[in-house]
Each structure stands twice: as C-alpha cells, then as structure tokens.
Length: 111
Image (cartoon, rainbow, N blue to C red):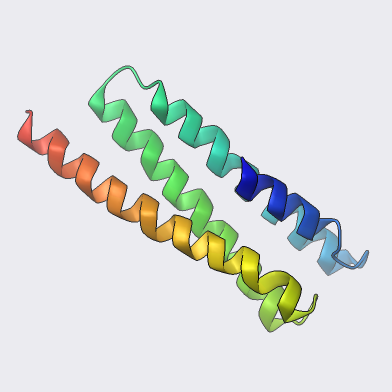
C-alpha cells in the first residue's frame, strides 16, 4: 500500500501534457494493482491460486518499473523525485520474483 501511495504522489507531479497523462494513468493503474493483487494472493484458496496471483503481482510491479523508466529516460520529472520510487519498485520486483520462484517450487513438491 505504501508503494501505491508513493507512486500516486509522484503521478500527481507529472506534467499535464498528453504523454504525462497517459504515462501517469498507466503507472497509477499498475502500481495500485501491486498491493491489491498481493492482498488477493494472501487469501488464495489453493497453492495454485496463490502462485497465479503472485504472478500477477510480479507482472504489475514490472510494468510499474517500465513506466518509471520512461519517466526517467524521458526526463518528465527530476531524477531526484523519481529515483526513490524506481528503487522501491525494483526492490519489490526482486522480492516478488524470488517469492514466486519459491512458491512455484513448493507447489511442485506438494503435487
């Protein structure tokens, strides 16, 4: 949830240009989806459902990294504003990537 809030605050600072609005909307959707889908994975009804939902979390955080990369490379905001959010997104991607790998391995063991 804190990642989503961090991103929403960043999105509010994007320029009101057509590109700023499109990128901001896409980033807001993917970033808020990370927390929502993670919560969904926590109440999964089966291991397979947990793995599937965690896969969605990883996809959404990776998409968030992509949009943050565009903001950085396109210089839509100062790097000092974007870099902490980008770092957090990359860390979350690494965490969820490892978690998904472990969950997949554990799911294979229990079959």
